[in-house]
Image (cartoon, rainbow, N blue to C red; front, side, top):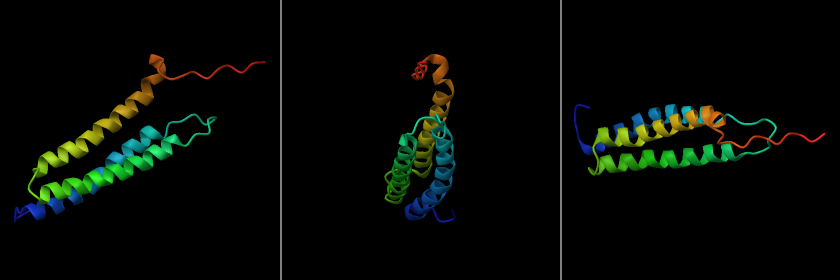
Length: 112
């Protein structure tokens, strides 16, 4: 912090990114954990794994961009982690309100 060199700022972006990334992935996990227990599907788990891999690569990419002087420290943090935060909140909102808007398919009633 005392020496504002691009390489030091890149390291700081990476370290702060891991903390913010953990919080954002926690929110994403909350949104992905809602499922129908009668349905045997692992798409949410696959999407969570893919999200982690992509998000971790974005964290490393922002570190390289800040260390190279292409992007500022604040804009890298806000763009990468703010976008992930908004995505997680939108997923939670969609999961909460999808049935009330009729976006999800309702299960067919069991025939007797």
